[in-house]
Image (tube, rainbow, N blue to C red; front, top):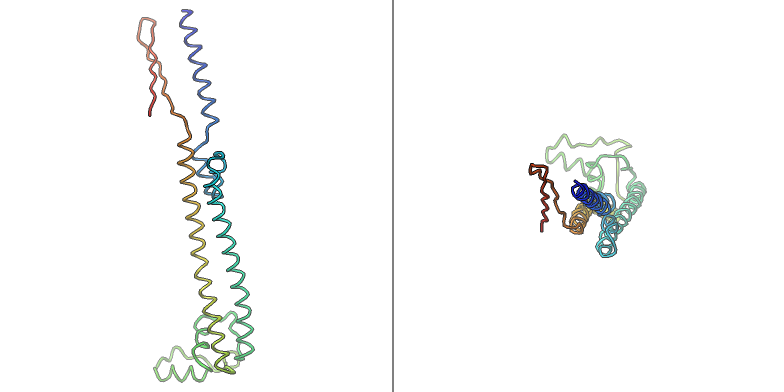
Amino acid sequence: MVKKLVFISMLFLFVSEFSRAQEKQPSPGMAFLKSAIVPGWGHLSLGAEHKTRGYVHLGAEIGLWLSYFGIYTRTQSLEQNMFAHVEMKSGTSIQGRDRTYQLAIGQFSDIKAYNDYQERNRNWAAFIDENTANNWQWQSEKDQADYIRLRNEIDGNNQKLPFLVSAMVANRILSGISAFIRARNTLPIQPELGIIPMGNNSMAVNLRIGF
């Protein structure tokens, strides 16, 4: 009886120590979540040997955000320059106007030329009323070409922004998966300990260790 109590006590201590050790081990799920929030965070929380990979993902995230805000800020500045340029050089305003109107003034020197083209092609629905709010007339071909250049640069920048957002999402996914795998690989081999009653007040201990 005493031997059984001693054995059970030692078994309890072993399980307790093993449980405490497990609590100190990194959680793969938590490592994934951290890196999904801030790329590289999960790696940095795993220890010094994983910091390089963490800084790679973190640096990529910072670079992507800087690129995004840089392009966004420049696009906003270009739009203001374009609005001022059109109003000064063509006599109309495109701020708040639909894209059809913005493209029309880039393709034709004035509203009469635009409407004449639509009439020749019998495209009556595309007519623009010749009133004060709609009339435009470029002072020179260069002014019109400068508007087209600004318009194209703005469109190009607007196409880059969704790509940068997609790259940020991809960086988080890759960082999270990498952190999850590394955290899982740092976990020790987990033995499975079980007690099997054998009858006649006896028991057997089953210890399995997976590799």
